[in-house]
Length: 394
Image 1: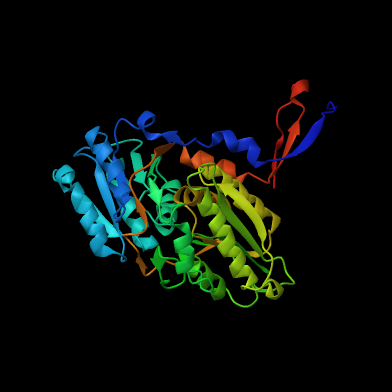
Image 2 (image 1 turned 120 degrees about the vertical axis):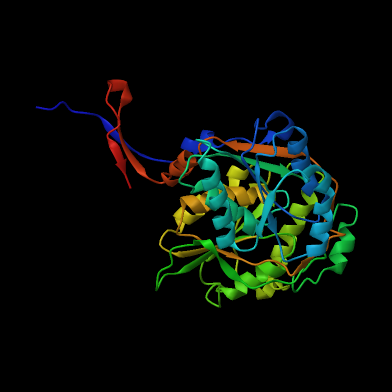
């Protein structure tokens, strides 16, 4: 005979693993002793130079560090001019450049560098400076690193700009300059080819309803192009087919940016006319300072809409790109739609260097496995009676 055991069913929730997310820490207090591989991208902003300069000055980057530099097709002269200011510090270093807009090349370049390093080091320490990285590049890099077969440590570094255009003082001038019908701002122009990210093509099925998750930026031009690319079935008031994730911040200096994005989004979805509403999306807000906020929100939205063809359009802040990358690794059914601008306005984008942050992922594989268990049903016995967990059921 067997004794009766008291069991219960428990659905794994994000709150069960939230403590596994490493917190964003001030760069000054949270850096590695050494980097075996360092990845960054060229850019025109002043903040692009801050982190590599600091890492070199502290000898965290040395002559033994493999350095990978991503190049963009946009603002080539501006990017090279800014990067040349690092020449005095990098004259003794060798680095390889790669196409930052091509996910396949990015993955191949990073994987090759890790494989070359792993021959000499059991668990390489990889640093990624996302200060000059597009969301496309961040998704490419993190997909590569978090799915790497070899065990690695991952450090993510991020330098904020001191001021972003538009600031609160010239915000009204920007609004006058905007084309409200197209949602285009003075910060960037145009939209390149609309394409799905090679690493996040999702799982799409025939005869399924579509669902879109949008994370817009200050300019809605590329966002609007991506929505239009998905077709008329998305623009349908009779279906709940759209969720929007808008930025929130406790930084009063940048709070107006969140308000402006919301106003621009409203104009887009109302088609400039309250009586000609296109459709009403579900609205969510995520803190831009805490990357795990958007990880949780994306997973929750995906699980609610399980069985639909889900597409993510992401043009959000850089730290939110980190959180969104983790969510897509946990929910591979989501596909990622993207577009780059044809050009940036280098003189009216940002200036100065603000706060500098770092995030240390000690066990990347374990974190992804935990994220993938969210929503699973766990059969557990009552530990108070001394019984062990019986198993996991999905």
